[in-house]
Amino acid sequence: MLVTGEAGMLGSRAARAARDRHKVTGTYLGKAPGMDGVEEVRMDITDREDVFEVVRKAEPDYILHTAAMTDVDACEREQDKAMLVNGMGTENLAMAAREMGAGIIYVSTDYVFDGERKEGAYAEYEAVNPLSAYGRSKLRGEVGVRVCKNWAVARVSVLYGWNSPSQHANFVTWAIGKLMKGEKISLLTDQFTSPTLLENCADALVRMAEARADGVYNACGRSCVSRHAFGMQIAETFGLDGKLISESTSDGMKWLAKRPARACLSVRKIEEEIGAKMMTTEEGLRFMKGQLDMGNAEGWSL
Image 1: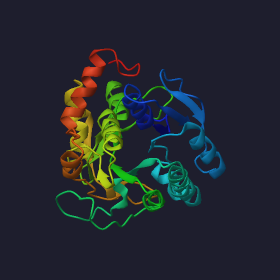
Image 2: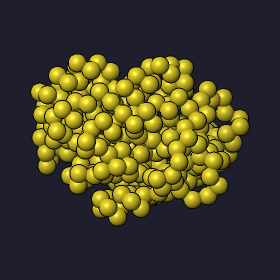
Image 3: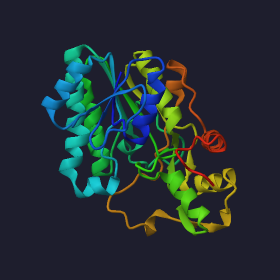
Image 4: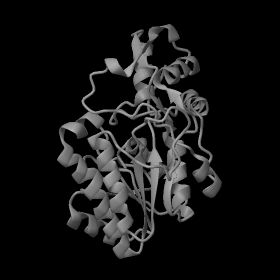
């Protein structure tokens, strides 16, 4: 397997999940992660010649494509770059995979939906309507990946887990960091998502490759929760002060890009067809607490 974005949070988990059962090559753009059991190579997914050279040398049976430009407001500011990375970069990899007869799984996002539904969760077949440049660029990747004969899309939502010092904080580690310092945080009551534990998602990606999955799947968490409710779960799980968390609404946010209000995703398809068990937020946070108790939390301690 070839895992793009190995230095990132999801890419690092995907490489770890795959290396015990498969030969793994990981790609990075900045500094080599230095992961044991993984052959590492620098690759710029926006450079088609570079992509073809790396893929030809690695000769993968499958590409797990986790590399992306994910800062939603940065994508709004730099829309051409977002489309180049998330859209054309994905198509470059799909073309290289097609040449090698390999399969490819592309990690997409709940932000391909407008989130205007009042209840329930989106199934894979429902109409997309991204509100932001980020969502549009990821949707372009969903189209571009289809130039490969054996392709699949894995849509995720609010990835979380312990981050290493070289990786950006995610919602959970940001909230933990603030609450540990006794700082007050204000969380939204009107934005609902399906938060996704990194390890759970990585396992699902590897299972999809092993099953030669075809088409679109939601590879996210099972829950549908507001940011505020998720924050309260975080405080309870890690013994932090939930009184520091106040309620707010999205109309007070100074976002550059629009976010969907309710972009929860249904996991029925991936559980029934692939056999992956997608975790609830309670299960995911307990998993993180177990890692912390075992000293396996990327250097974090409370």
